[in-house]
Image (cartoon, rainbow, N blue to C red; front, side, top):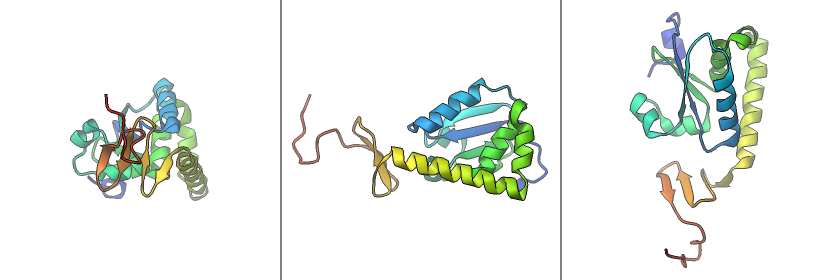
Length: 161
């Protein structure tokens, strides 16, 4: 995958937003994006999904679950605040805001917003080490990926079905 800096000057005709489908804030933003009029088409794909891995085999998919990532149609990769700015740039009603956020002062504000969202996300997850567990028994561990640990198996006595 090319970085945004190595594809400077290449026109962006389509963007793919990789979002954490297990994050309620991320899903809310996804739904909001789907309702927005766009100047550039957006595709929203769950980060770390089979679809994301198929489309972008050269991308570090464990990073996409931790940091919003947007991929342009020419292989441009945007992360964090830059990703949000390019998504706003793609929206008809928010392109002017994207231009303001692309200035040094605006980038500082955009970074603050991304950090605030990351902090909120961190507070919503049930962290255990570098991964997190969902209530349905699935857990994400960066070194192993998604594993099923089952609810109520901590003491080794699990109910069978």
